[in-house]
Image (cartoon, rainbow, N blue to C red):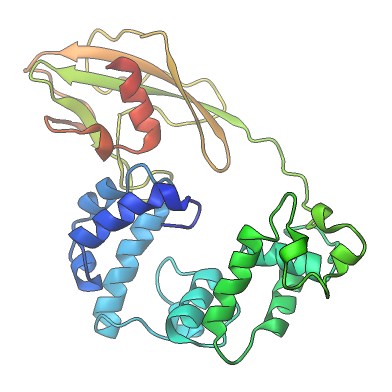
Length: 299
C-alpha cells in the first residue's frame, strides 16, 4: 500500500485490511471484488490484484509462509526487485540491497554521480550494494531509506545533521541540492472519454466491472467509451434520454491526463441495459477515485 501512496492515506486502509483479513490465508480466500472494493481510493489498482495473487501463491505453494530469499520472493506475483530486497532484508535479515528513490538520491549525492536518472539506476544500485552490511542489513536498509526521506531530502537537504556529511562528495563541492539529475519527462498526453451514469427508479445505478487487465482492472465503474486522444464516439449502454450535465471529470493517471464527459439518465424499472448491470447498493467508497468524481458531479 505504501508504494506510490502516503502514510496518512494508507493508515485507515491498512487497519481495515488487517481487521478483515488478519492472515495471508484469510486474504487468499477473499473474494476479488471485495478486495478491490476495499482498495478503492488508493489508486494503482494493479497492486491490489497482485496482492491477492501473491497471497494465494504463498498459501498454495509455500503453505502460508513467505519465502525468505530475494531470488525466491521475485517469483511471487507483484513482487519486483525493490520489494523482494526489502522483505528479504527487513523481515528475514538477509544481506539484500534495498534501493528506492530515497536511496538513489543518497547514493547520487554521496558519490557525486552526475549520470541522470533513470539511466543512472544500475550505477546507483551497484554503489548501494557496496555499502550493504552483512550484519543487521534490515536495520541498515530502513536507516538509509529514512536518511533520504527525512534528512537527504530532494530540496534543502539537512546536511548539518547528516551522519554521512563528511564523506559526501556532493556536499564537498556544494552541489548536493542539484543531484540527482533527471532526464526531462515528456509532457503527458490528454485522453478523452465519456461516462454514462444511469439511475433506475428504485435508486439502483447502472454499473459494470472493468476487465481484469488494464487500467482500473477488476474495479467497478460507469459504463463508457474507451479513453483515447481522439474525440470519443457516443456509445450509450442503455436506451434512454441522456442529458449532458455540463460538467466533465478531470483526472491524472501516471501516463496521461483524462478529460471525461458525462451523460446522465433516469430510467424506469423495465429498462434493460445493453452493457453492465443495475446495483441497488453501490456506495461511493466502492468506486475508484475517477469514478467517484463522476458520481459527485451528478448527485
